[in-house]
Length: 303
Image (tube, rainbow, N blue to C red; front, side, top):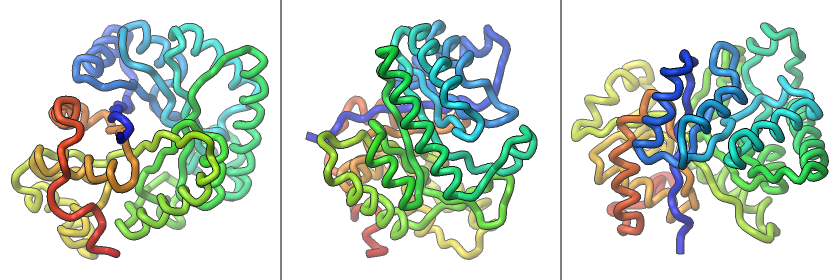
């Protein structure tokens, strides 16, 4: 049997206490399983936001999606994790990444380093956290993710949840602009992760970050602004991207079932602007999680 679907909501904007609590309760009402926050300057501070989210809700887990390891000293981070785990009643999930926005490091006066140096720091952080949290008997599910081979190997070795964003940093950009990868490259990266994870005793849960959700019977019209900005992309190519959900409710749910059947993606995360648009998808996949996908499997035209 496939792993059951889980749904995460990544909240990006800070708010006064009453508004934040109301937003978290709305996420719970819409049926999401996890309330998530990122780790970017100018957005919510992760750990106090998650404590408040857990206090405002009853059912959802809470998590970082994802912490920038370059911002954190592992010993001090272990204290934050253990305390947040306790204050949320054990509902915390810890997502960690290398960080990819050089401008944020420059603003904070922190070294950015090369991609290899950032992965090395993340590995040290993961290993030190495991040692420190084990001594405190704090067990927090760990989410890791990335595109490069070193990140995929690290994820395969340590993560309970393997996350994929379906995009990569635009070369030369310091502000964090991401470019979606095509279906063929996406398939190759997932296959590479599976090679590294082949010896795991238990498979990790696979997470996908959805970049766009539009429920419509006119996908061409909905995507026209994007296609005007990206004349190198055809409509069919955009619709084939795993991280883009544009179409009727039936088409979107079929696409997500196909993603789970083909790749194993059962944990789906959407960004705050798409919480309401994705809610009918959550409801339908809860109601009918095993319906057979219709049409060709995602990316089959690229193989």
